Amino acid sequence: MTLNSGPSLSDNGNNVLSSVEVHEYEGTPLGNLDDFRENSIKGPRTVDPQTYHLLVTGLIENPLNLSYNEVLTSFPSYRKVVTIHCVEGWDVTILWDGILVKDILNLARLKQEANTVVFHADDGYTTSFPLSYLIDNQILMAYQMNNVTLPRERGFPFQLVAEDKWGYKWVKWITGIEVTNDPTYRGYWESRGYAQGGDLNRSFYG
Ligand SMILES: Nc1nc2c(c(=O)[nH]1)N[C@H]1C(S)=C(S)[C@@H](COP(=O)(O)O)O[C@H]1N2
Ligand SMILES: [Mo]
Image (tube, rainbow, N blue to C red; front, side, top):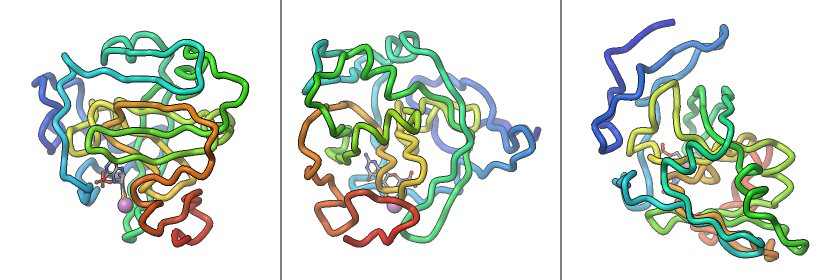
């Protein structure tokens, strides 16, 4: 394992360095946090973990309003090595630590007619998924990458690890999870011509 002096990007605003970046995990070489090309619709967002709330709304029995610490302490953590591919032609392989979207939805208790999940972000960005994709693939909402707390450029406090999907489905700065029965909802890039499904093995146009 190679150690850095710390993340090369700015920290997440609370000046606590959680750990040092790792560059290899169980034999798999990892990319670096600064291999990403920051190209977000409004630039990096600064989210204050003291005032942050994750809202879970829509077709659920138990609406949730969780603080940053409540999100981190209410659910088990999981880790995965997953590669993000942007439509602009770059990719980065990262060790992600996070919680399962499925566990959040279980706590919120889905209504029968739920079939779609829309993620909302601090910059107004949105993207949506079939409920079954999130559950069947054990999709993570990450709070750590390469063993460090997500830097603000990378979506602090939470980024979706939308494995097998193009980068535009990997919503950063998540503030809301809305459960609906409208599979036709189109998010920020999807309403500007990018594919609704965003599957890596298909064209991103459409
Ligand atoms: N909230 C939000 N999430 C977002 C975006 C954005 O503009 N806003 N950009 C997306 C795109 S196009 C990519 S490729 C990934 C990774 O972007 P990054 O390199 O800027 O981290 O974040 C995705 N998530
Ligand atoms: Mo992207």
